[in-house]
Image 1 (cartoon, rainbow, N blue to C red):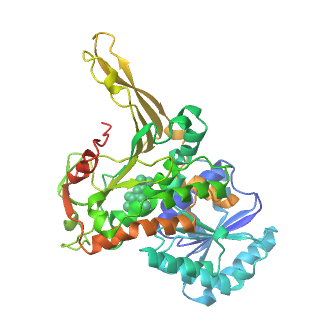
Image 2: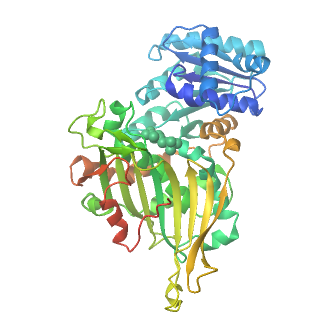
Length: 488
Ligand code: BG6
């Protein structure tokens, strides 16, 4: 890999501390960083390089999945970090930063390849991109890349505006939009499961699959993020991005080649085939919920409206469930159910594929009916795959019982999403980043839901904290003769 400089805006913030420094550290331990690699952190706060390195060390010790107690190695790692205080809205501050970077590049004979990672409020994305371009930074002779984090807009229009402003300064190929769900090892594994296993590939369509259920439930509430969350809700925070990405990864067909472009094309085909929702139909296919008070892991939990910073009359959704249809030859007739919520019974992200069983009724009356075969892809909190089959009970003559074949990845070996994603960004591989067309199509599909929610056309159902969401979300599946598969 060519030498490069990683410029981190928002280096004193939470994301840097919790995710970015630990990811860089783990890449360092695995010798996945280029030989010539430097990080320039920027923030408003005044800090020396030494102070910054102490901050990075503390963050890594606290949040990294591993830490090697070796002073020489730690010193080598920390020496890559530099700090430059600046106000990102002030164009002249970029000159200062550019000079320091250039000096470092010249001393180390490092090519002027630069990655700008924006770990700042999205309102600043456009300003920073424009100031980078207008400053000396913009005249570098190497390549440039921009890493940004969601939210990419608040709705279709604002997402388009944001994209337009970034595209004045960066080409689409240079923009790496992080959706950390695409960095989760089991999500990256989906294409292998689907396409490297002829058994599954053969079954991966509407002839054999009865329905698909995608769940991302959390036990945490709004935490300290009410300012952001109360305006976003589950629909923007989780559904429009992470969950639609899971849907695309599950439903896409085999690409002609396993290249970023071809995989993206297949994902986009899924979005284009999603049956659009009209605003007046939203209530029939989408359930909107908000948590009331209840119990989580034996402890009392406050209602959403009583959380600090939340409007007491807030109608923000903390739970969304939806039924989606993909109108193409592979999936037509197969409902995809998606649900996500805060303050639910368990932390679990999983995809359950329920298979059809045309011979179910062929069993003689004396037998119990077999349960459906289920393939469960466990994304979080543990990574693995399980397969539910039917087996004859050895003792009881007519008893058929479900048995489960399980594979669980060894938790210690599993890299964090940010490690995988940053490594890809360093290599310029955009396969697991959200392309603008995906982001735009996701907003487009979700927009009628946003409108229906804001016009109060969809009832807001309260659910008790610590449960699996409002009753209505169960009815959504019952209408089609199915039910959510709860795993414990
Ligand atoms: C983030 C959301 O994108 O994803 C959070 O903003 C949510 O609200 C988080 O808690 C969930 O991520 P994970 O990896 O814990 O499933």
